[in-house]
Image 1: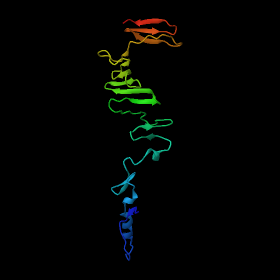
Image 2 (image 1 turned 180 degrees about the horizontal axis):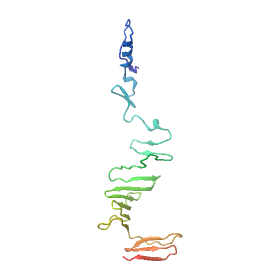
Image 3 (image 1 turned 135 degrees about the horizontal axis):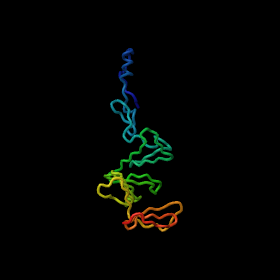
Length: 191
């Protein structure tokens, strides 16, 4: 199987000169036998990697991997050490970008038209949101007219216990309440 097509074909009795020898080498091109057409192909006389020609196994035996659906798996530690230290998620419109640990989501968020929001692992309930005006909501999806830098809290189920070394802030029937570690409940602001 030929790999090269020479730039000059010699016949019996031809004189080999510098010009014909240079032409044979300098004008040579790759023959179709130089590629397998599964992983490599010819393009303009050059050998290039064919689309889909490199599989994860050819890239690494123990590092990142991916499947035909575009799902990537990284084992070990993932480190970003460039000047622009960021991870950019571009999910399909309407889908939540996720950082997960096994089957349990550690963080699940969705880009919203005016900010972003955290959702539960089933992506069926919004847990928190930050909008473009700097408003932060726990369990709320909207804020009052002209709100900027507001913290919104949904009516909560009052805590039934008082863990040591902390206090709990919550809203009950529209009133802001605080429960200290001794169990005392104080209404900070009425409804």
